[in-house]
Image (cartoon, rainbow, N blue to C red; front, top):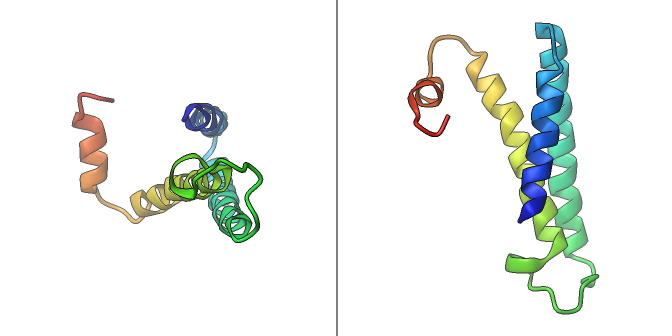
Length: 101
């Protein structure tokens, strides 16, 4: 879905705006809270009658989009916290040596 591209770009711009470690930590904490709220809100909305009559939850439902968006956003903060534990993780090594980066 195209919404993930725009959400990822917005999060990337927000993270790039951080100039200090303190700002970066606050942004990542906010991403964790926003991501959890989106995921839980999407799940709660999935229990209600669908707003789009022809939507299938697993493929075209707006509620499932928000669940996936919330989980993805919270995973950014989780990756930041994991990286902050010290040392070089395999995730950092993969990011530095990947052809996609």
